[in-house]
Amino acid sequence: MAKDINPARNNLDHDIEQAVAIIAQGGIVAFPTETYYGLAVNPFNHHALERLFSIKQRPISKPILTLVSNLEQLTDLTDYIPDLFKSLMAEFWPGPLTLVFSAKPTLPDLLTANTGTVGSRISSHPVAQEFVKSAGMAVTATSANISGKLPAVSADEVMDMFGPRLDWLIDGGVTPGGAGSTIVGHDQDGLKLIREGVFAFAKIRKMGL
Image (tube, rainbow, N blue to C red; front, side):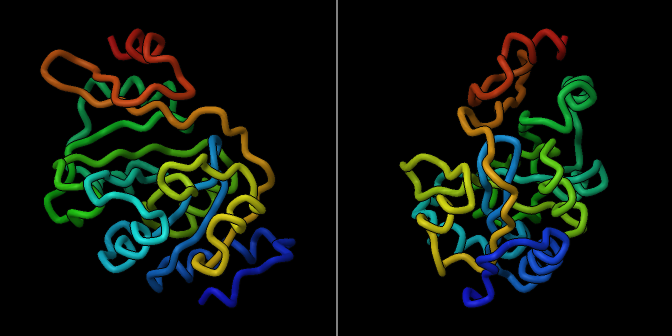
């Protein structure tokens, strides 16, 4: 499928349509988000996840984050939305806040890294929103980079890093970069910061009270 990457990338609707078809076939798609470019595969496809880990050179001990377009898609990943998260979802979604939920036991171990949890958010980037909505399911949203290198903020940087190892690229222009999504989980003591990002944890914690 790599030969089908569209270097002109001048028809966004076509690019999204092709990306959705490629995801369904187990392929890997790069796409823009409100932070960096991300790499999307079908998170329920073990072979696609293996390919994703391989091209990123990512340790399998690290879980993969996801995007959803609505709460119905979120229920494919988790059976439980904590009350603590509901006000955060109302305030910060769509946006760069990843919340870590208990994972359905049927999710691939590669996705969750055997943690029993899965991170997800609704992206505020219009291209990412349309892509995930059109896919009709959650997709992975791990940053477009070789592990240990800076994530890509443009289509050119994505191609320089991955080239023909990708199956498709949606060019959404230059993304803001700077910081990734803030990642927040919870335990018996309340909200738990996993990674500082675009949103300050102090603000998030205040909203979660």
